[in-house]
Amino acid sequence: MILRSCLAFVFTASAALAQQAATEATGAQLRGVDRINGDTFEIIVPRGQTAELERISITLNSCRYPVGNPSGDAFASLNVRDINSGANIFSGWMIASSPALSAMDHPRYDIWVMRCTTS
Image 1 (tube, rainbow, N blue to C red):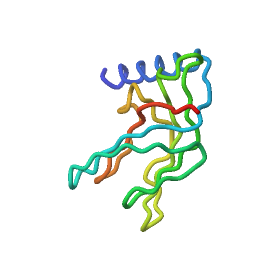
Image 2: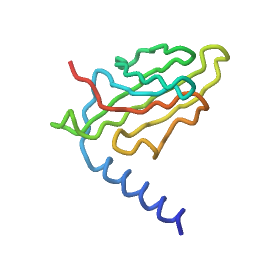
Image 3: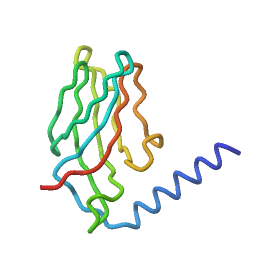
């Protein structure tokens, strides 16, 4: 029953995003926390660029938002890698309004999308 409800929510959220026209942004504002020492951070990553943060690198492939609403529901395509091992930690889309829908699973870091940035 819970799985069915979760799948219905994912389908509804995906359909809502697909119906909205989206605009490509120049970058994204990300927020995160280091679970070991409790430090929080905010970074702005330009589209197509990679930011390094302690032991991880974050590449922003794309950040989109609803047309005419830059502060609206942002969704970003990210690749997150471990700098030391080169292992892929996360690759996919994150949605600002539903960070748990496609969350990064890492023992030390949590990262989520806050908004897209525009020039």
